[in-house]
Amino acid sequence: MRIDHVIAWIATGLLSLTGPVAAQSNEQVAERIRSECRAAAQALSSPGTEWRDLRERIVSCRDEGPAYLAEQWRRVPNDTAAVDWLRFHSARTRDARLFAELRRTALDRSRGDVARVGAMLALMNLADPFGAYWFSDVRPPADSIRRIPIVGGSTTAGQQMTGAQPIPARVAPAVVEVFAAIARRRTEEPRNVWYAAAALERRIHFNTEQGIGR
Image (cartoon, rainbow, N blue to C red; front, side, top):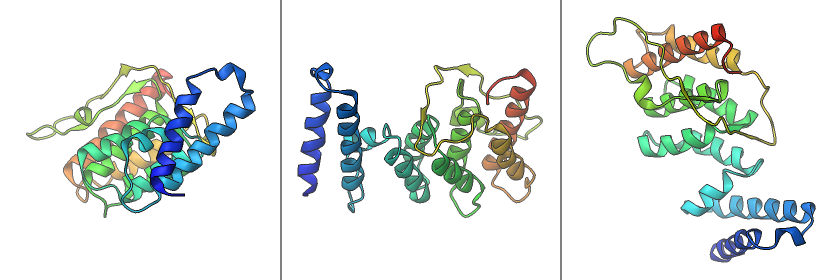
């Protein structure tokens, strides 16, 4: 099937879902959604295909979405805008494949600092779904670092999608292991990566003491 035909077919399907859905059974609607997810994954697997509407569609798919996000983390450039798009959607997707890739990216010292910090922020949101954590929260001060603050703390809706391969309800212990491993390597890590890990590690310990998060 040609890519442009795939796009048109998905668009038609999405429009139909806004029509008389009640006339379709739950299984018919579910099968249509699964078909659209498979078509989006097929289209995005073609070299050079990065249509915004397809990317926004696939992240809502329980199977194809996490797989797509994990693949994007493996090759995302060290670009704030590209990483922040991944961070935003990854923070709302509870899937084991994506969770494993976020851990790998955060710990991989061959990766760029923006990608590593973005992965840590997404992990933090999976441990604390109702928290809001941004790049600006974990940016180190321009002068000497005198103390590590308790970052974040804003309250969000906490809306997260459970992927086809769910992660456990409580992931904070696995997440804090990542932060602690990086924070222990202060002299070996880039300053902003180390600071982000140290700040998020302190926040997650604070959350545990307060009974916040998962």
